[in-house]
Figure 1 (cartoon, rainbow, N blue to C red):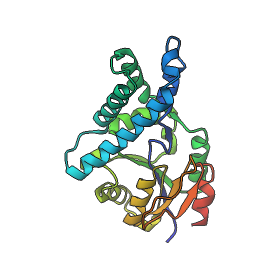
Figure 2 (figure 1 turned 90 degrees about the vertical axis):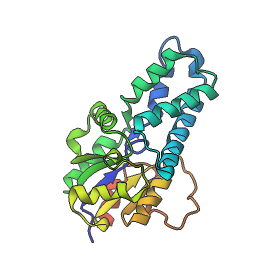
Figure 3 (figure 1 turned 180 degrees about the horizontal axis):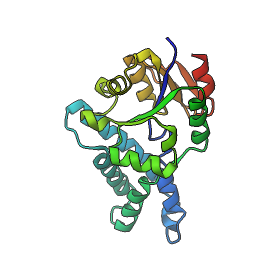
Length: 229
């Protein structure tokens, strides 16, 4: 069955989640933070993801913005920055203005030129996703932006992946799902999507039984991959 739609995770896949901390570190007066921003950004992301998994597993849901704030507060405390209210506010503001990876606009244009539909499927709240898409200027290259919030649970719960079929009326094997998160690519593979893991950091494959169909270092190669499948 041919691919008819490419569906993307948002954070870490289309949008650089480290850009908020990086941009804050570049601002005047944040020289002390500049030496620590990478460690904070990494821990912030780790806790953000862990909190989605725990909430999905326990059924204690809150939206992704709450999870994002909780992850940042944990990271700030670990880095000894919990008392810096100005830094916290600035980091959260910048999270609404995340940068897209450089290859994203041209990649989406190439997919659209080949007649494929494109969409986002993300744990992000609708308002967060709208802000990120607008900041990156890619809204005209997307047919839909789908939030897990509509079903009240986070990926990799199958109910989130179900949202693609509900929105587009396609079979799972018509969907090419693309994520930089290995756990998300594995979950989508188990669901029945065709999958690509965007392994930007050259990490080893997770020891799970449902690996993604393809692995690539960035999104530039995706139109070619989609054409081959």
